[in-house]
Image (cartoon, rainbow, N blue to C red; front, side):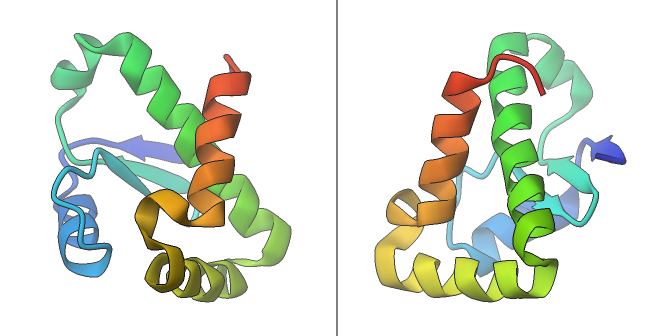
Length: 103
């Protein structure tokens, strides 16, 4: 992973307008995790922050495993078919974040 970016307007826009999620905490783009809120906000919520980083790191691994373009195409297909919570990529990322306590 190359970078973690805070206060990302792109992350907020992506979550709301592309994924249809009003409560997006973070999104991944190639080689980065972008958080909607500030670093100070997440410093006060360290346990949740660490869990989200593990979740998003899993998405980065998914992209590396299948290639970014194919990952995005499948992700959006699953998103439309199953919704965010039922998306197999999201299920894998949630399970990964719970199982792995380090990235």
